[in-house]
Length: 179
Image (cartoon, rainbow, N blue to C red; front, side, top):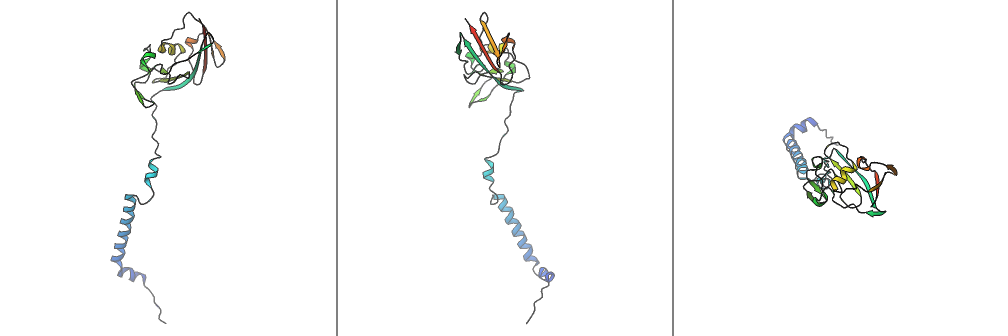
């Protein structure tokens, strides 16, 4: 029986050109597969790219306001500080948004105190850190309670001068006035 003994170095030298060609073909094939996407599916990861939301406000929070007139609930309208008919005082405009996309609509600007709906949720969106008062909100809205008997409370605690009160995040403010 004949034994075959291979000399690896001799075999490599005799097949050197073919090995180089095979190596180049493998490298080019892998490179092409990566380039045209036969590897991992890159399309499925693209739909999960999360773009950061840029908040232009230095101060941004909301609080709740409930108003009663002679013990009857008063609806606080949507778009105070946004809609021109509900934006009477413009003295704080420089602190509000100068235009942004909201609910699919581009708004030319808004006051730093505003409403998006009629739920009584008042939002503060200020370009600077500044304390706003409940009186500031009523000025933007154009509502004046002067001469009315007002009972006010914040989070269940009675307050005397509601106009000077500076609302905090998640406050629940109740005003009851009688005519």
